[in-house]
Image: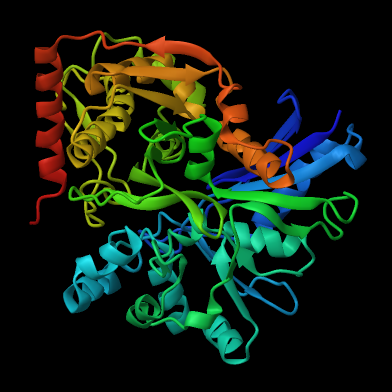
Length: 494
């Protein structure tokens, strides 16, 4: 049977998945790479480390496969992370600046003061925040001589991770991206569907440095001397990771929503063929584009820290030896005993958008144990989504009936049950949790003509478990009150 290869390039590692066209997983491989923290609040990746993990994982999943049967390749990626490489040699010119990076906070404030946040929000659907790629590009052009010189010499290629991978996989043949990634840059006009000269002028970046825009599904390029695969395999689908998860969860109709628990947590709702305007500091973004004039949009609320909080407990505080241990440790106590954790380790995302907020434990006493703090960390991940969901429901003017959940941390039953408790809605967890990779498979299959429409995708979604709220309304109100009190402290200006 013919197969599809998905490359899922994430914040801490890369996963490759090989599936047949009946969606049976045949092989999967993952490989982590180092994170670089040059200064507090700065986060970088070495592009060669990323490329090595891509090649390694693809070689691993295809070593026992008939590679001649790979019909298509799909790519999904960490989104706002921006890369700089030489168009002619293909070599990286600098580290990638990661979506978590906060170095442009001061420049963002200058943009808000000069132009007003509505200038950007009305054109891009985004808020002015260091999270997005455009201010990172501006910073690099001003502060990294190798990047500035390459731009002067006409050798600079910039783009999100998908664009870098596409260039490498095709042997440097293309410098392209697609709208779900482009819509995360602050330089792409959400309804005109193009790089915008006024936005670029405000960001102080040249208009001509951005990649060519292509639809999310369709032929981008073909392989050229890539990971031992035959030349000529088509790359036919690319989506940013959260949009890929939306597709992988079969949220293909207006009003359907999902939350992915990865390094951060990302709640997206399909809003159909028109972008939704948020008045509660959520983001309107492109979900996918099937053609230059056929766009689907999503409303998004994101938190910067979810699974990364568990990694911090493991690596920073040495509370646990492996991430998997946290559920048993947190479950060894019936509650967090009044302890609240705000995961603002790199600022707060939606709907607060406070890059200067810092993480905080409150409610600590002499009776507090590691277990209480571990439980508070899991609860803090869930509490962030309460603020997002409330904002989303206000923007929509109606309650959200349910939510599909996925990502690594969605396997944590304690976290999912608490999430259902504090949101007060049902959560549905699919059988296949790696819906980001599945979304890349779907996008590639749609682009290659293996599937013709979204109805084929809807038929494939299968539920593993449902989590229903298990606390009273008064308990929920009291828990949220404690959370908001803690958030007020960590965002207080002193």
